[in-house]
Image 1 (cartoon, rainbow, N blue to C red):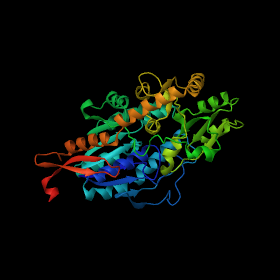
Image 2: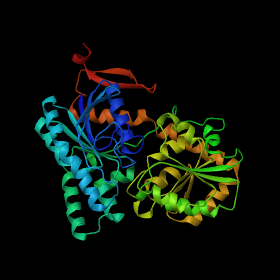
Image 3: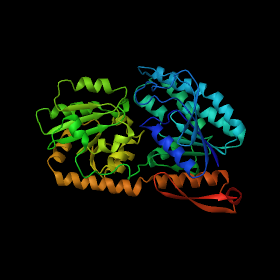
Image 4: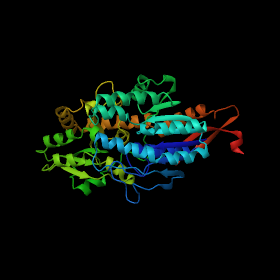
Length: 435
């Protein structure tokens, strides 16, 4: 099957949608599908185009056997609602010539990754011209987030944006998302329930696992072995609510047995650093390479996942998968009924969003109870092994794509494919493809 994946973010980005889009493309290619990608140069989460790439030039790469075309886009050094809309629109416009180029290739499926919905018209047009099926996979509801987080405040703009979003969503053949709540939100926005699919983000539990020893990062950061380490690792953006972490660290500044490690990049990093000035118990790291991720996650005795109350229904933090897989205790800020609460309630500790006092109490309780930390960490690890397998998500995706495009027709034969991560995937291909 020919599959075109169209999205803003892609490898070598190490976090967020780009990480999962790249892994999805690679796994589909390893299953025998012909996969192409149209994306932007890497810039997230630093909001700066990576060295070796240009903000203004087109570029073609091959990444893990996948052919990748990159379109220019404008990346603002400082974000605002208007700047973010221009940023997204710049990619939507600059990528149109690359989409037109793919028309001659005639993909069987065009998969758009949101954000950004600004690319939806182009994706739908290509699908209609080529007779392909159009699939929208939502990692983040950007329209909801923009208004709920105050990035855009005009009531008139909200009405127009929501009307356009509903109009576009209904035109895709499949709309998927990473949590059941986010799938249901698509239905509320007008998508037929039969056209939806649940595709959770995943983690390879052989790449992320409990070390069974002291992480090398303790020595690197000068943290005594006896100290309890509270770790936040990931994007430092507006919707994370990471200002609560600074307040929590300040509450423990008088203790010399608890250390906080903040690792990542993003628009809110500078503010977090400023809030932590003068705190002796804080260490900062830039985003670490993927090869060091397991070592980093294992420096934690306690993972913390803050979140703003007004963003809790809109996102399912991708960083949670690695936290669970590391086998360390997790404290998450979430409201009942949200996807985050659903995932963590039996596998970690839940505190209300933006409630610094509750966060401090939860950290203090776990810091004093090694057995409880171990039990919570083991529960998270079991959840990662049973519910967050990349194979499970890929099988759902591959099966739905086959049914959507008609590639599961009579005469298809089962073929087992060993993936790079060691798993075996069974797919179905036409007999003519086996000759």
